[in-house]
Image 1 (cartoon, rainbow, N blue to C red):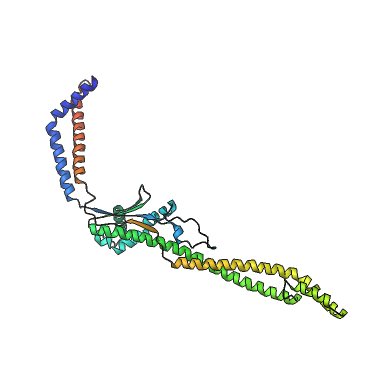
Image 2 (image 1 turned 90 degrees about the vertical axis):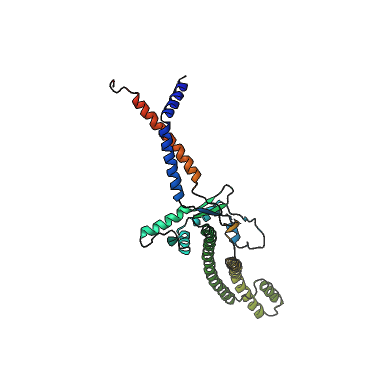
Length: 329
């Protein structure tokens, strides 16, 4: 019953103030229409692409066996591209290439002016991951053709910066391998020279067959002087063979590691020189045919509803104040 009475009271107030409410709402709607008509039309162009896996820029493993490779990027690849999209380098490049300061009619003779250009660009530009894990790059502009050009350029620039980042990392790795190869080559030469010195010192020329040859020569010796000479050689061989064998084994392992490093170095050079894409393009931005904003009908309807609400609220407050007996208070 109370709810019914309240509703009836509300209807009575609206009826009493109906003309005033209609007048205020009409003024608000007309004002909104005039303001919305003076607002510029903006067109939004959008390009969609997936992040490519960083595995595509890596050289094949040594040994000829294949490992599973991801072609589409993981979360870290997506985050890397989004970070590039929000970087100052990208913003500065786009602002410079498309002369956005002149396009937005903003003077950049002061730091504040440069800030305003960046602020304007950031308001009109958007890069986000959609529900399908693809990256959407959108650009708004009064000129639909420019909106399309900037959106596509931003996509290409993200790809270029991502490629350059990977190339820079590859260059650092290549320099590291180059330095290691140089050091290992010097060490291997030093080890080889040491082996030669040890062999000459102990009269060793064949670590595998010389021992057997000396034993056979001792058995064939006919005179004591010949046997004494061969025994001296066997003694020298015995003293030095263990040292030379250890050094030769070390040389073999060192040479194998150096060969692997050289092969890896060649693969890194090949990977750096090869072309790869940091993105997989799904859809290029096209010239938008329909404006993205302002939504004039929504603005007008919203203005009418809001003005109606506040008019009714004001009428209720006025009527409430009138019903109060201020003398009794």
